[in-house]
Image 1: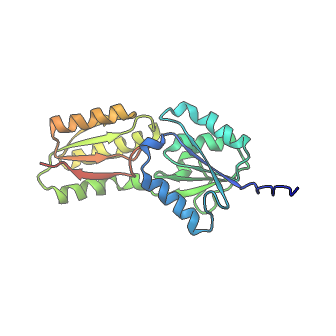
Image 2 (image 1 turned 90 degrees about the vertical axis):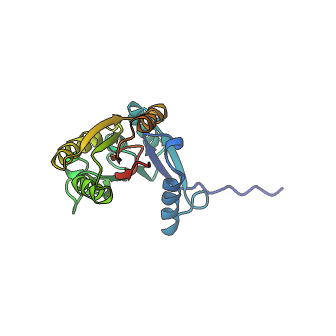
Image 3 (image 1 turned 135 degrees about the vertical axis):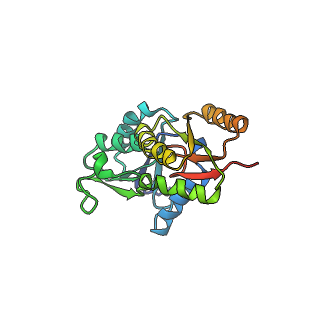
Length: 223
């Protein structure tokens, strides 16, 4: 009787995110998988991706990161905010960690320097927080008559929220814009925030960088 050939064990990539699959767009995951494919790694063929989602519960991050470490994944990719980055960094000093962050990773304490990150942590930095005033100027160019702006942030990502509010509120005052902050974490809170938009009809919406939103943007509220 012929022995059944043993299937090779695929190397594993850990994917850590404090949100849930429902709040992460298909485009984001598609881009992640396509980027891997562009470098020769195809999910299910020569690499396996182990997804760990916090389901919008930040306090689950340390346990999920520790679980990936116990699995001895080859690398941990952290997305969706600083909670995932720091949970992974705390969980292991040897498994490589790759992050994306829109703040200064040196100031946050993630890496030693941009040129030489050191340790087992590296990633991509967008510095989008420094562009807050420019975004508001762009909004004013697009909607010259705008006077009331709603700022939407995710309180679960405390560091990003603090940075966004620190930058956007003084910039809005300097431009003569009235800003109101709305905080949304869960799907229900996001729905409630959009219901508020419909009721109050602000002139524009400023989406802050957070776990659930893109790295910032401004939108004209439709008439």
